[in-house]
Image (cartoon, rainbow, N blue to C red; front, side, top):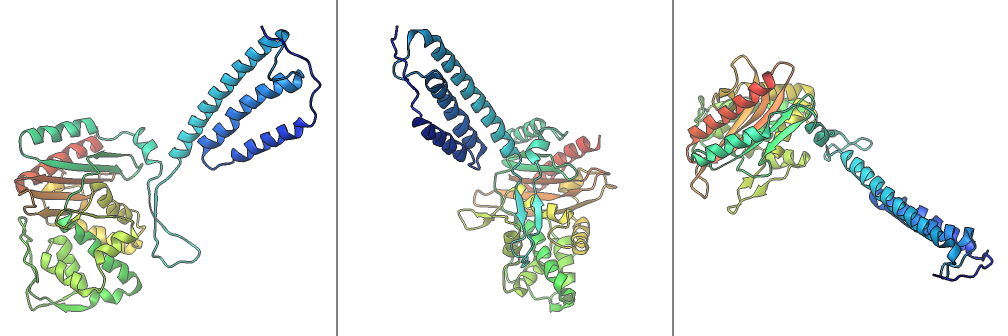
Length: 392
């Protein structure tokens, strides 16, 4: 049992208590909802016990009397309830706060003074991806693992995105691969961006010279440039995209004083890493951004976005994604291959937009293995599975 003495309330302490509550309220304005709520509700619960037990009942906090023993127990219970409510509310606000954080890519090079153009936005993608129908990542993972066991595949990465609603599926989407000919897409985007300001650029003539670098292509272009013949820049772009012509690519790279690839990727905040040999590496999810900004016409204007995707739809590469989709369905895609990397393996990739009726989607698949033809077949098989899901 405790013995206490009733004392007169110390009026001079009240301003101090009010100041304490003011400080707590001020701390609660911290922009992070979790810290703010905890700073308010937890200390206020403890301060409520102090005020209720000491000031209202005119008791000394150090020497409570017998008659008020239960009142202190009640204060403790209310303190625990207050802490529980505080933590629960804080967790709820923290979840809402993080759900509403929308990753954005803005055009940092636009030169505008009063606006900041939006290039790409993952609007609520985590929320939507958990609530809207999408291909089963479990079944796709199972397929990839079986192919690995059979020895046909060493590694693979996949990214699917519904272009209507935004849900996506990623399998190994953080793995990096050598983009190889996939980088021909940002080269085209670079010249089309210049042409928005000066369309005559695309009509400038260039004489085709022998390639300065000899590159092996397993999937050879169906048409090649004629050395010594004069081509316009738009004709070089068409050869580069339709036939994945390396000679046209090298000429276009040599015409610019800056790196067309780096310029476009920097504009879109896409980062490429380097492998041990200094070769560029990229993920499927990062590369898919290029197709998203073309589809949304948010980097190039609508005229050149349409032109770029039309050229991509005229690709003569009929393996990979195209091999798994009915011929009447339009696709705009770019493939890439890398012959024999440091591990003695080859890489084959295919990324693009499938214009399924009322359900357009992006699919990007990157693979690593021993046989490029078999890798192209694997991509076609995955493409077929995804298409059948979307089309049903």
